[in-house]
Length: 288
Length: 291
Image (cartoon, helix red, strand yellow):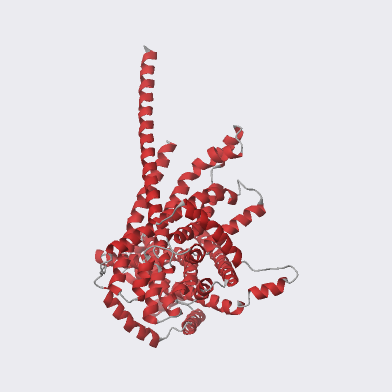
């Protein structure tokens, strides 16, 4: 009786196993394949690391020095240069602000040439879009170095660098906002006898202005981060002091500057979040 | 009688409207004044004037003109070959750059995975573990890669290793934050089902959370790869490997035509990989929406 029950159960289980093989773990061939994939992955990983010169001895020796650096980071000290550092930090923030402002003003004009519903000529639009991609694809640090060579050391190079790479980003974002604008309002202006400019002014701009402002604020936040490093290539801001202290191995001042940067980024993020919430709120109230 | 009441309502409305408009106008004038002050102060701090700005543009145009190669139709291919005389070396450096970015993304994703679960409010009981993990992620992503690279170049020496570690640390922080935000939005029901059938914490994560969040994690990781390639292309500026070092030399020593050649190579690679990643992301998200 019990034997028969056991046999029936075994048969039942075998049936289940045949019906739902995945529920009983992987089959042997699957296991082999999976192992082979992971083995190949780790082999490639190992050789890639080796190719880049990452080795245990180098890491070990480096960790030794890293320990010294980490020990030197605490306690953070200003080294008596707090006013100078504060000025440089303000310069970074000012660079980010002016760069974003210039970029959004330029992008507000350029973006129309990248939008399908404004510029139907395909080749023209395509070339505008690709130029935006080019401006965006080159990092602001590269632009900063180029501007330093072209217009000299100082914050002007930083402002222009931020503005240049942001013109690309913002033009692209704004163009996408224009393309996704509600067609009904555009049609209404057109039906009321509005010309091309009036369509843009009364049909499109009221729709995309909040999007433009929020995106500009987002860019301001991220530019504050980039503006803190542009000084490394001499384009103004606190990056100069930071790289200077790192090269001189004054680690307590390095950590002090990093804390200042993190604090400034935090404050700017907060202001920007507040303004964005206000803008979105204002936009909603206007609809009502 | 009736028209009197209507008139009163209209008068009240007009009064309110006028008041609202007046408040709006005052608000507008005030914010415009604040804005103008901020612009003025910023311009003052960064020593920016219309005159200096105006002088900068022709110089920039001149600079860009100098970087452009001389291409003639009659000797087109010879000119291209002359322009890209260092093509194979630059290609190898570009390969290094991509490898740094790819490895940094892999290690960053692994680190982010390890950190994101204890940094999700709904997955850990202890507030302190959550708090510490979140702050750690925050600190490691707020400091720019280039700053880490500068420090690691001192510790580990000049070379790609410093850059790799710098981008890894930044990626870990950025990905841990994004991953944990996904984790906090998971459907709790499968988690409770697993817990009630006796699964431990790791099993809940593996079979309850991971299947839900993996598509989002993959899209975020691909997006990170795009950003890491951009970062890897510039960390060479501080001696941390990749094509950035070559570009830095070209700009510093005014090898004008090299600048345009290298920048064009970088931009084309970045654009190409962005396109591929975008396709992949759309495919992953599309699959997710179908389910």
